[in-house]
Image 1: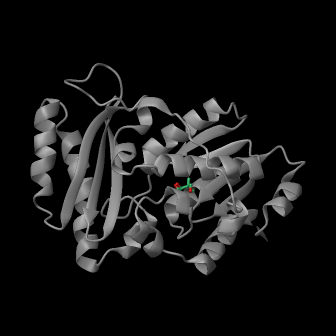
Image 2 (image 1 turned 60 degrees about the horizontal axis):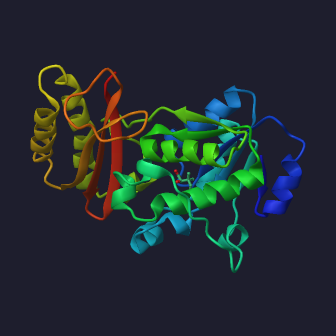
Image 3 (image 1 turned 90 degrees about the vertical axis):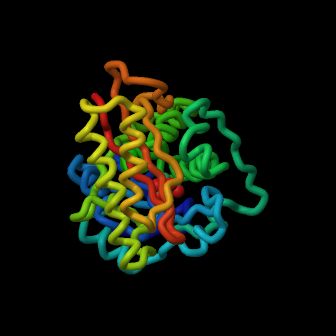
Length: 278
Ligand code: PAF
């Protein structure tokens, strides 16, 4: 496995390779990330993983400071998963002095849910992803469905910039009790970690009752269920169409509808989602 810190050296190394699969990450890798690496490896691609905690996408300074960094372990996991190349740039390598940040217009999808609750987050995320795509020039790029809205924004970015990159989604990987794997899970205390399972339990409860109740009743059911987990502070629950993330108004048509949840548990913010109809 080759490790690069400089973008010019990485671009030169990959320049004649038309078979590149890219998994951008912020490190603190877990089986969710590794499943994306494995998808790329299984496709026979030269698999490149970047590890870069992108300051531009953190709207909360403490979240950036506390974001877990486990680089030695990350490298071991990547090597074991068959990753070919790792890119670990410094901030100045991605954002040299006087870098102008792009302002994108992703339309309605960036104005709901995470877009509404984390101002500037998607713009900062898209800035780094565009830069990383420009350095790695992959044919395929892999993103997890836990950050489903991010996946939608990235598809939009690729369309907007007309990049010849296929975006491949990866299924959510969960712990035994259903908690979606996230780098932030390791910041939870033991009691918080226990109660965090309530997010998945609530999504499942709603799905089990999708044919019993209408959407408003399902929303009530979810809100009531969260009361069993007093450490969970609900930020939002949203039913939205899977294709454009437009909020579901009344009852669903035949389109796929997902339920999205964002919560705070102690100092940690977690998100999850599940397909409910369709
Ligand atoms: O999903 C993430 O870890 C980040 O948002 C990404 C895509 C690596 C960009 O910094």
